[in-house]
Image (tube, rainbow, N blue to C red):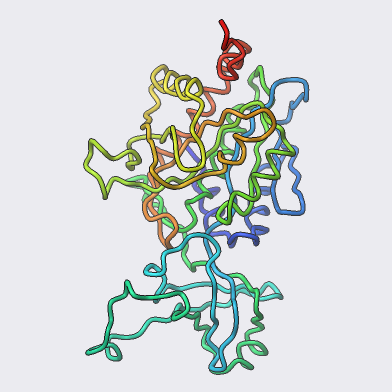
Length: 362
């Protein structure tokens, strides 16, 4: 079973896009004994202990960043105008608690502004008409000077939601923020540990990519550095079980790992998809297949590296991603780890050649 402490520390870590240092520190804490390095973009690379450099390479990918905010300007009254880092819908923002990290590293608590009902009676109060320009972060300051001199806040300071992780032992349910994609980061670590001691036909590198929410930027770098032959990508995928009927839902809690065949960023290698389903059937790993009409992942960048990289996207169903509070089922995290682990353990030259279509003419 996945380490709850690992998930808790990863999801609680402060790490909006471009400011993932704290997440990197948690990763380092839980990967002692592995060869772990980072680059200037805060991408982290985790090699297995017996990495040979002579075998085909499978890259495990997950992104470290979460949706957040950045201070855009400071009003005369001390409120902080902000822009979003990543795709956050404006209607999810009013009255949310946030943390602003100033240039000294101090975390300042704030609240995103919202009008009390007393001031909107008899006015146009439809929240769907909100724009980001109407909102601001209130840290309790009463002037621009106080915000800057007392709270130490400057233009460009990052912010994210002020939410703490919780685990319901009875229902095996996790709640917290940033499940997209700290769950994936946990899956890389758990998979790498599960593979220890096994004689593998491949070398495995975990690549924790920054700035995915701003256009898969970190994966553009990691895929060039690692130059994988194949990749398995872990993603905290938006659960749809509250929006579609049971027969149509393709990302439901308690129904296993999501195998993604398509989204707007890539179309999956069909052989890789077939192998994943075969592994699920063989080992009794619950899975659900999905074809997404929207969304995208690091697979969009990784799959186009070099002479093309087949990518398997394994999703952990997560309710309300890109908002301040998420739910996931621990059993779905475990299913993703088991799927990746058993697939890598079963990988041999024949399977690699089939996925890479080296027998296309046969």
